Image 1 (tube, each protein chain N blue to C red):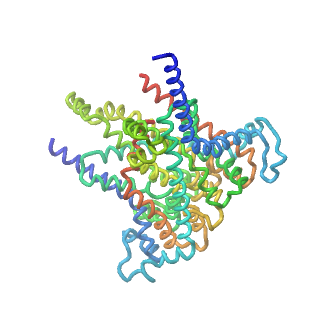
Image 2: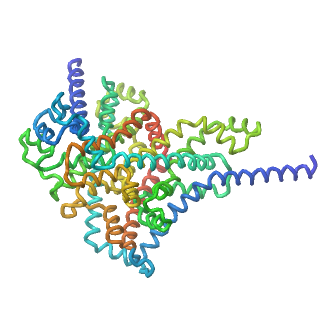
Length: 305
Length: 284
């Protein structure tokens, strides 16, 4: 092959390569353009607004205020209350919902009659939207006419105020949220359980392991990755709490169910204080990012070891 | 030993049944109450009747009275159509845009590939709740408030969907595409004529995930589609709930109606949905 031939082939290869890159970008372009406009740009403006005193009614005279909004956040009782409520919601719901979901998955994974029925039953609340469930449970929780107090009354427990009491409202929302969501994570756990090789259980059996020991040394380690995934999704979902308080309590009574995203919504849309609301949104985003980064770290360490 | 086993079985079934009751009774009550008038709902609440449908001839005005009232008091039909346009619009355009992007990321050698992939994975984490305020201002400046464009266009490109498509196409056998290329098919032609028809499961999965997510959407439709003519069902339900006078029966009828489309999706397509979410669960 002469030198010229090689040069020719190289050129052909090069043009082929650049053509591939061109087509590739053609395929990618719509998604990249849309993501840039409707995701990256808003993220950027959120950070920018958070450093200004942008007020919707006077959008033109906004000025740069540095970290003033962030300083204001940490002395704002209303924000701190919403933040605390959201953390409380997350701290309770994450372990409880995970345990409930795992328990349901283990039960349904057993060799039982009517498996499909039970699985469908536990999953059925997931089929309803959070709005439907929130409205339905508001009626169930109704202090004087609701079904729950009727049932409690039948077994001799006095009437409970549920959503109308600052002490019970958040817990009432938590119970409902677990009821609505656990079936979803049950399905993911179930897939995880079915991936644990049967021979591990058999080996444990030969070693004379009890049911509890099998759970501790075979089931739990086998579910590590799935649990991590579920842990992260429930945590992030918990920090996004909005629909339940918005529909059931409007953040009340006495702000006891006000959540982080609800506070951002009210500050931005009701008070039109975009700058301040953006700084809250930045805090919210950072929390979500930190949770996600922890997950990546743990997951990659898993893979490394 | 055998006795112990039977005993365990009995305990297992009893706990399963109790749990099933706990998970089902609010739903049963909702559907059953949607066929009763308010007087009967309250009268039945003190007994097991609360979970039983009305006896023949018991429902005054007929079983469907609540549904008729609900559709009269709130334009549920309109809201459901709006929700279908909203979710349908996102699904149709989203499948197109995201599958192309996922394919490009899986197959083409593109300069800066790592950066694009990194950006898409990063955007996977940012929830819409973070950016709804700046996004609203953007959509407002575009003049898209109370339009389907404002509802749909910001959510067509979806990092999660792109990622799911990419994973699928990475596992797709290369030989088929090479054969098509040798036969003179262009890359775009190969994609639409060879890849897409053979990738129905992943398209189905993405479509269902998109449907479920957006059918349940609350915050974005709430801020961007406040006008009644464009209201989605979730927002419509919230308005209906706060509309005086509060009637329990029609409310339950409305909630039941709003759940039917999801029942449909889960009933027929659950397989794809479970595949999709277990796939992301194990690979994430």
